[in-house]
Image 1 (cartoon, protein in one colour):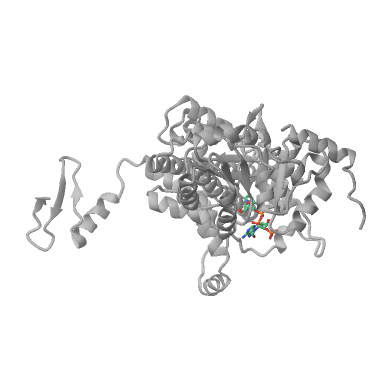
Image 2: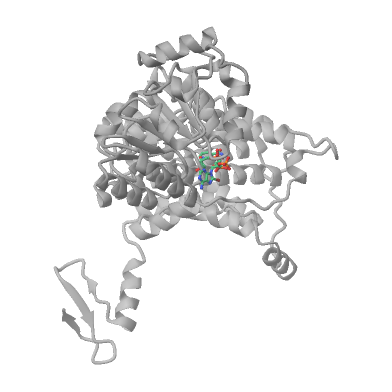
Length: 510
Ligand code: NBP
């Protein structure tokens, strides 16, 4: 048996500073017994998102306690990136909890759903009143509401934090949308703001509201992301149908990215289009199967919108467009059976057409934001969240997938005006007045040529529906009254009315 070795100098330093409650020496992994109560924050779940978030926290000078169900991931993280900051490595949950300063801040980054519940169940016995549990995964906001209520009963704070930006964002600065108690934000907010993306020094992280507000905002963010990607896809398809090659379209997107359309998604679109497949020497996009996948946040957005009665037809069409693309047997059967125009667009002035497509893309994008923000505003009222829509636009300006120049305009419009819809904001309505002619031309040309533009046309239909003095809903009400005695209201009188359709067709007040 060898004698126990005295601690190495680095460990002594770490232990001493940890015991004093100060951050331990950077780059030295700290054992849990040497860091009791010294870690400012802990991360559970060290797959790609959790690891990168932990590294981001450590790079910002926070001492980070680490725990993962499979220990190998914890060791791998410290082995590869331990030099980036101060990590406390733990193999058991009680050890992990013991290393955290109070109130404890625990960020869970595990697979959403059952994984999150399993971690909460295991964690709960080790926590004390006032501790803060953060779920940074892609949870459904109703799950977050349920978990928040459950932990509140134990005197704990549960924060559902939407985190966007993918793995690079988690490491370099994501957009963070935390919900939960205001009190918990006081203890947690500064750390999250610290690691979030910044725009002119302003963090892309803000308190969104109680219980499920943060995850709701993140869900709608993803819904808008679906719509934006669909619009970009339609613009690409139209330009190809008008005879532009893939590289030409990439160049168009590069140019657009220097103007009002500047955004992360436009930027990566140009890069994807420029990628050449090494196997075939063809544009990669031409050899990728045209069946779009989805993980479910777009669907959740639409399901929630249906329940709230908020029209988000651009997001709905985007979810359905992915579904349509992913039904090969349906597409093949219809392709064999149906005839129609051959998708050729022959614009008289190609340059002008490219500009019209740009206008359609900008306009549709604004509509998707208007719809998503309307959904957030409506949910905020329904759930009593009091979400600040200007703050939502502010924290989406960077770090997240839908970051775009347009968001600064949206932020400033919401900050300056009480808006029912983004579409009435002065600078938005002025721009829409300028772009709508091109947008209409593009939709009309696409329909005539047989190029599907479900996103562009849904956005336009939404605008025209909102603009209409009278909608055919009056006829729908008449029909409903005819077959179901559902009654209708009159434009010239108070109350509800029913026509005796199968009788003498006189009207009765009900
Ligand atoms: P995954 O979603 O792939 O989950 C893997 C992690 O969950 C591993 O650490 C795994 O531990 C842990 N885990 C599982 Br699975 N079941 C568990 C359980 N019952 N108890 C404890 N741990 C469990 O990781 P990710 O891709 O890093 O994403 C984490 C969260 O962030 C998810 O909610 C995801 O939706 C969300 N998100 C991801 C992205 C992205 O770009 N990937 C972006 C935004 C948000 P193990 O190592 O022992 O298997």
